Length: 326
Image 1 (cartoon, rainbow, N blue to C red):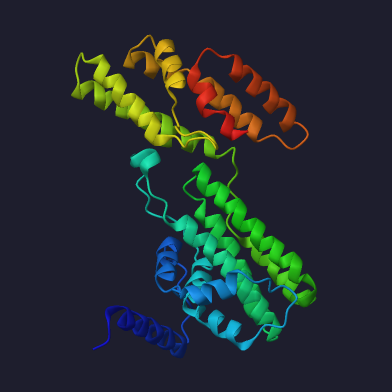
Image 2: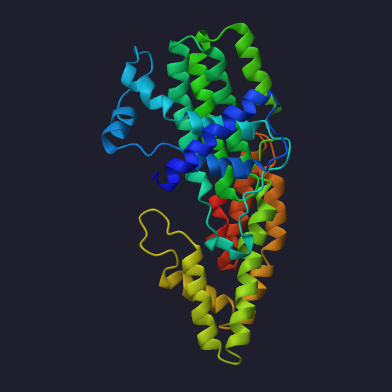
């Protein structure tokens, strides 16, 4: 009896054959995220030896051996679905539970970056075989995936989008001379038709809801669960902050004792004071969104001024939360 994964793969291949045989166009009304999740499921699980073979060598400018081509063929089903998702005409909804705040899982981001890395290798192989259209479609689909990955508006998703687009565009630059003018134009057209690029400035409102509003709700829940017990509530707030923040490089804790002591002192030792400090961030968030949207040349000076103002603020949360935006 075939194992379940073999049955699923067989059904996928049969479905593709039937769709092709019927002459019917691919559906464009499927949530792209659903197709991406399916693509991740059929991505090849390479043995360590094959993974090392692919990722520890410099392939650019080399004559690619047959082993390389066989490994690239293992990605065919994944890229069929990634290409299909790129043609979808409906918004991409990853189904992320944003109410979880910083604890929300974003498992698609690492998988998405792996797709664009595979797209580079597939383009190398396809071009060596004279299949320019195949290379073009993979590269366009990878860029669309990066843009769709940032639809939730979180800063981390937007940073991954930037990384994916950088990899994809560098690949195009490296392979530029191997494409015909017609295929280069179709690459450009595909990039231009991709969903709009998410900007860092657009993430400010999402991050406010994702972190600060979530923090206020959690504090209110702590207050309700521990009426009148400010010591326990403040202990819970410290744990929330420590769990939500990432420790800076070279620092063991995300929330050192000295930082927490300054915060507690500024809040007057009460949870209500912490909530007040959180609400005091709103005018700075509005300024931040404006500054982040400025073009180079204007941005640098205005951001320097804003960061200097933040450093002078008596609100410790500003110094704790805002510098990463710079």
